[in-house]
Length: 336
Ligand code: BTN
Image (tube, rainbow, N blue to C red):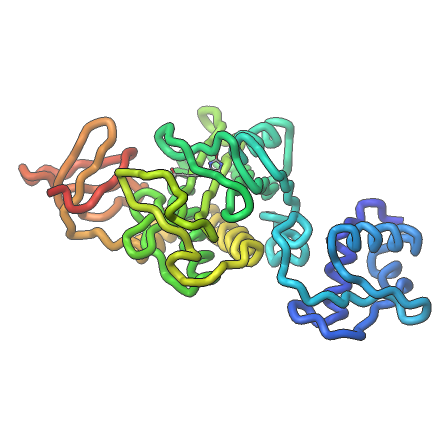
């Protein structure tokens, strides 16, 4: 008998039997069929069904016909709904869900150090010490947004992953477009903007040695259903949320599943094709080429934005005509 059967395996079969995303009443799967497909005892199934009911799923049980998922509720935001039948090979297959964490990136790093598998995802409903780039704080109130971190373990030297954050930005843009219908723009290196306002950001952290990567943590924060009036002022860039920009509430489960699928796709592109495919795809979301920009980094640079090079560094032609290559910093447009 297999021992590692989880509630998500049973839920997947119930959903399949009842017609997937739109369950129809009266579609049963027998206990015998579940037992044969998953290699578990009828008693174990009964226990898992009990746990699913406790988690809020309405499941009808019938002595002859078996079990039927009867609730047609919107997917709740939970580890179970995020991971069940997720169409990925490894990202989001294991999801650890917390009501509150200091930071999902910190938790994911801890898990990675303890040996967690590639693709393990951490989600928190709220963060007490959510971290942004360049030492900033990421506002992380409960119940409305997405805060998630994914563990990657590329078997490559660190240099081969220098465009991983750009890959994550493309994945995030695709996921946002898929769920909201609006195509966001990227602002170098990884702010996601709609109508010029920031709706999401990425914090990438890496543990590596000279010739190998131990792990990379891709941390993503998305302002999903938050009222932007409650976001703290950021003089650098106005902020908004997907709800504000679309005028409707966005299902966080669908969005995060889209994000994990897209992230896996672009991560595989990076591993198989190298940075060139990533740089080309990222450029399609970048709208500031040819514009006057200002970069605040190790030093301030103003000039015309020429785009990014093959390693993802930003190229600026300054007032003297010299081309500056910027590897870290913050980008503003219209320096006037
Ligand atoms: C930025 O734009 O400055 C990056 C923001 C990244 C925020 C996310 S929320 C989930 C993960 N955990 C953190 O502490 N930070 C990232």
